[in-house]
Length: 125
Image (cartoon, rainbow, N blue to C red; front, side, top):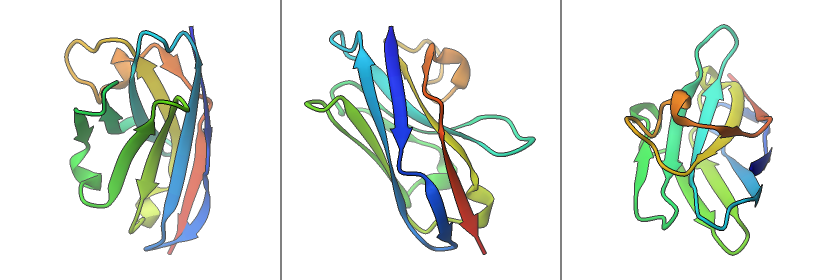
């Protein structure tokens, strides 16, 4: 079992920045892939970024490339998502997720077994 707790959400104006954190606990000794997803009201959950256990492999959704940065501190079992130049349409509940090995698409929510509760990000125009 892996438990995930997100923090760092809040309200910002368009063009602003936020940094989200996701602290993992439980059976993380075998190392897991960590990802960030977001879901706006009445929209499907969307993969934002994923990072491999070593940090050597990172994948971003096209919509956030160049603006968002995912990173991790393995000593703290924590993954971060730095979000810059935020847009109002990126208002959503941001959640982190974990898995041990993905099969087809590391940004697909269907791949993930462990989920946090999410943290709300609101971007005003």
